[in-house]
Image 1 (cartoon, rainbow, N blue to C red):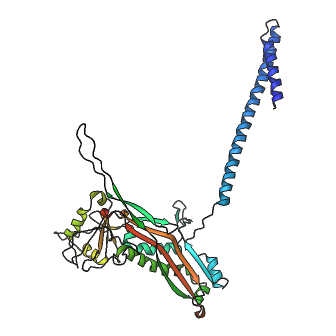
Image 2 (cartoon, rainbow, N blue to C red):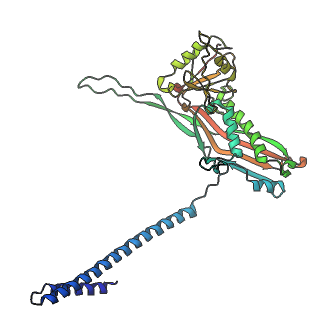
Image 3 (cartoon, helix red, strand yellow):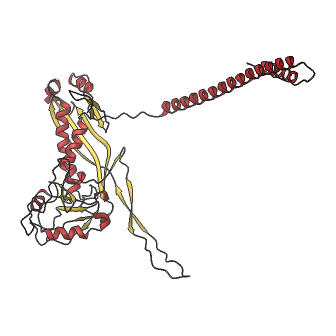
Length: 402
């Protein structure tokens, strides 16, 4: 209904209402006029509601179109990230067929879930994550490294630019004051610790016949090979201070943390010495602390007994749960430094104080050019990482006798 029609209805309503109120007219005429006025008023109300609904619909439509236009504008200029956790099967087939001679991938975490339904009922349906090459590399890394299983702070970044971590070296101090006296000024002292990105890499030769054999799952083979290689090396950098030496390499967890009092022996350790380490750690760190220790030292503690001949060790009954000593989780690490003079085969503390940075995903590359005459493919893999203890008070390491 347009404006002219609305004005006409308003005029008709006014005239009918005036007639209904005119005392000079007969009662029947007044009643008829008021009924006409009521009908016209209903038409006006309906027209108003229709007009209001149309206005609201137009506003909603305009808002939707504006949002769609904004999304389309952003999508037109924003790069779309492509992540993979596996080497694409189609690319492997093209490589095996000789259609391409070189290819390179960066494997990054991406999760795909598949429904799994019980044979008799779907009431217990759940999800699993299919295994990929990246899964196997990460799993080998965790299996090899007790430090990573203990829960350090892990950063995953897209590039290798240096990250500066602010570290508090001198805390604020509060003092007792007296009435009317000024408060004591204290200033915190800050320092920084850097996280870079150091490369761990390797390469191997794979016969071209393997790529042409449809019965060989190259994702599985290459994932296992690269995973074991990277896992062992990463674990050594994080666990052994003689491997993860800092400066141009990652800092091991026992480098930059706090030393315990030297043990009485360099070939064994006593329960009392472990107790000393346990209670030397500040309580605020102890409540979230974990043990990480060399296999040989773990065996010493696992077979230790109290005065009544009972084992002190608390073995876990669940495969996914770690064993515990005095309530704190214990993680075995075969790549901690050995039981020898002045070595550091154990760390105890809040492992979130230890920062591990992985940069740029895991690169896997293939090339026929390097070993062209031997009909072999060179498979190269690399990972970039760094690590540093951000809070030295939060982790204590065992220093063996000198």
